[in-house]
Image 1: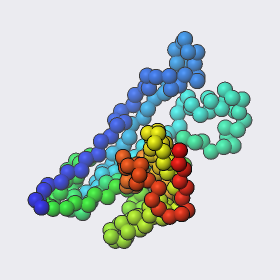
Image 2 (image 1 turned 60 degrees about the vertical axis):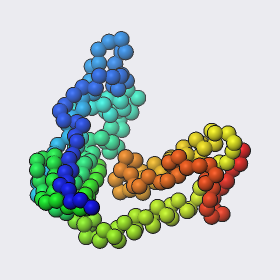
Image 3 (image 1 turned 180 degrees about the horizontal axis):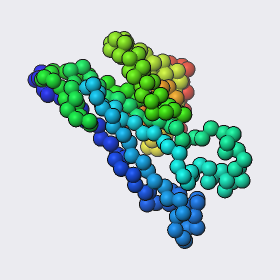
Image 4 (image 1 turned 90 degrees about the vertical axis):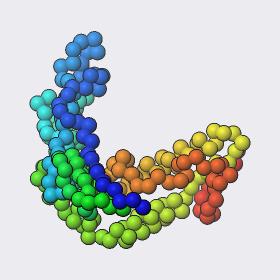
Length: 235
């Protein structure tokens, strides 16, 4: 196996404030008139250092708050001060690091020397409500705890979690109708998404574990193999 130089780069989508040019905020306007409260997307912030890329997004309170406007439109203005704001103070982001990787810019890490293998660790964290300082303190602690676990131990635990999940129950549909496979695959994919959203600490469906083979194009004849706790439906 050849030795290679490794580069890991963060791609930030929200780089500067911009107004959404869609009907995202059409709830607050006459559709034939101008938008009195444009939806402005604020940028992410990259605060890298110590051979680690760190980025975060923090929701600040706005002068024309969409949530409060919406509550007033629905006659619920009296509850605004009694309920936690679902957006203000929501802080999310993460960090990227790896053994032997050094800082090569705010968005870039590179290997200090050529390597045959490279492990890259991505730590994601969402907190609400939270200040930027609170979020960063919790992120650093989360990274410390994660890095204290041996890689092989963490991987074994990861695989065991998924083994127990997929062995818990299943539904595979067998039929000559090609749609049966599509229904089965859709059901399995939905279970996978729900597991990622409900099982990961990030509580986000885009923070995924490994993609199950059942989601890929397996032959229908292979589906349904497993223990008796599952369900098999024939058409």
